[in-house]
Figure 1 (cartoon, one colour):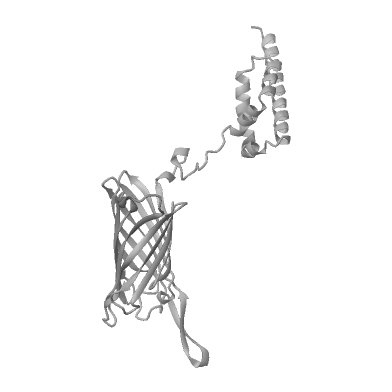
Figure 2: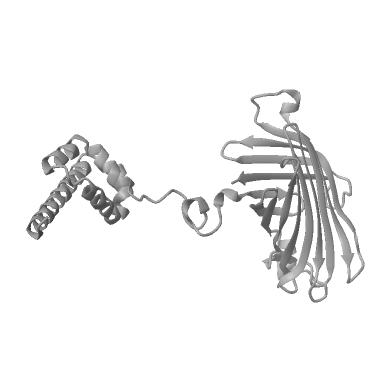
Length: 341
């Protein structure tokens, strides 16, 4: 084939491409005027990329006449709009957190956990974040943050009150606990054993006078949580040792509880929002006092609990009963609401 013929063919292809580009722009304008904004909004950030891909497609199909190609676009404006909108559209959820979407980091499908808002008769209000990331088929890496908000665990000061009385007030240096560990699953994930190690920050463990100093890393807390959950039964056992490691190393605590419950499916109950009912026992011990030697049980709670399963991955739990020790109060109550993700 002569160079003149090639030049002529190249010129014709360029004219056809220019004609197609003009028609595409015209169709896009018509779609906007007809209210096709839903798909166009998605494509607006990718408009240049979309045009490049359409150039490739049109080049392959350039053997068709301009009139035929133009008629095809006129017959299928919706297809053209969809094509422009969907060319290399970002995948929902793609990024560093989604390996399936081509990211280079962690797979968010392997994450699960929850945020718990909790309040009881002794510790007051607490916020807990717990999360797990699957590292092997039956092993998860776990981490958590437990924010204790009782002012009695923070820096306290004496201020003047009405009629010359003295008022003890606090709120700074509140106890803050963070930690991590591994969760091992057994029996098709019905049983899990989760040892963790945490770091305590605040003003509770280190000084003879609570709140005299605010310290990062004032203590450590090794803990163990055991969960069991099948179609009919549920249970949890928790044990933690709160150990002071800085300065006067004033006090250590042991905190533990056991909950055992049954599910409505055991009695063939259906269509009720209760996920389980059972008994809750919880114990807090002042285990070591390196300043004055005063140790012993702080509270010893036992009573029934009920847990409701709510829409949108919510769980509401309430427990109440007697304090067998009776020093803090003769009765106790505890409520929590958890959002699972």
